[in-house]
Amino acid sequence: MTTPIPETETASFVPQLTQARVPLDEAGDALLTRDATGRIPIVIVPQRLSRVRTELVVAAIAAAVGGVILSYVTTNVLWLLGLPLGLILLIVGVSQAFIVRIPEGANALLLRGGRYYKTLPSGTHFLLPYIFVSHLVTRREIPFDVPAFTSVTKDSVQATLDTMVTFSIVDPYKFVYTISADDFDQVFLATCQDALRGLTRDVVWDQIVDLRQKGAEQLAAAISGDVASYGVKIHKVTVTYAGPPPDFLRAQEMQQLAVLQRREQAEKHQLALQRLADEEALAQARVVAKVNREKELLQVKLQAAEIRKRLVELRAEAEELRLKKLQERLEQYPTAAKWEWESAQLEVAEALSRNTRAVVQMNNVMDLARTFVAADILNDLHPDNAQDNKVGEIEQAPS
Image 1: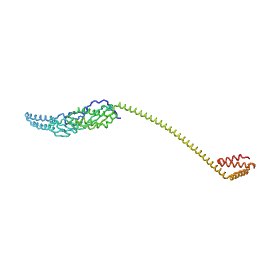
Image 2: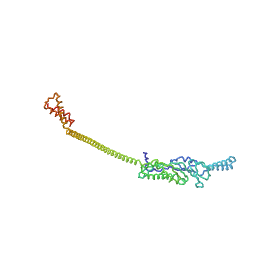
Image 3: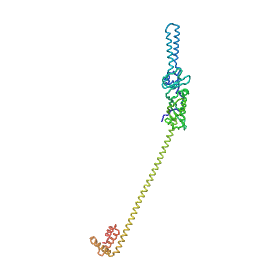
Image 4: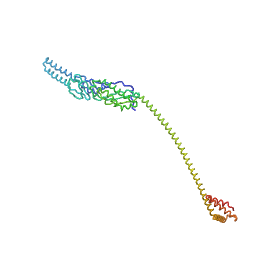
């Protein structure tokens, strides 16, 4: 941030431009030298309009008259020198009136018969003695400081402005015969301040700083229109400082800081709400995932139960089909079935007879054989329990 200028009131008027009265041959140095108050002479008025060296003319007349008087008083031939000496002094004194030297960086205004004749540029010129140099006007660019002053912006904020304006006098005749240098100092200052006020009233306070870059051309155009009638051309306008007072800037900084703090608090609150919403969404997602897993597990169990149920049904259907086929064979081949039944009884009896540990009675052999044959039939019906049934039957057989 640019350091504010501690200027809060309109600065008092300090003259910056003036004109000086010096001999014509000293005008060049006078245009480059500030006076005792620090002002720049922009116009030089010659101390004498006539360029004839009066002192030399008077000396020439005195020499001639003295020579004539001496010719009557004495017989010395020295009086004869008075006339040539007077003639030489007269020629030297008058010849200076025909040669005019205009210093570099200045224009000369000429008078003829008491009226403006023409403008001469820098250099050495031959002029008749009755044409006088009335003014010398500088051609250089002149810096003019517009002191810091306050102006009101569009939103009623006091703004401080400090400006430097560079101008030059392009028409010396208009400048010299329209206004004096001292008066132009005050008029130019008022014109610059008025242009700055008009520009300030068109912007709000936070756009004041932009005047340093964007307002220069607009200011130059506004000032040029007002001073063109004086033969002055504006070359450059530089706004060296533009901004509200320091107290106002500090108040704005505090206000912006408060806004930023409220915004930060709002962002933190929004972040906390978002975090809470994310946690709730995550918990809900976990519950949904758990329910889905339990649902999938239940579906798997239901499918397994359905498969077991279907397996039992298939086994029952297969058993029913087997019994049906067995029934059909028994009905179709009864003799063969009876023969197989008796053969099975004999095989069982034979197996028991080879068992040395078994003690049986002959009259019970057939009953025991029937028992084993019946067990074989049951094993055919339930093959999974066949081995266990045979072991149990052997252990329970009568000795």
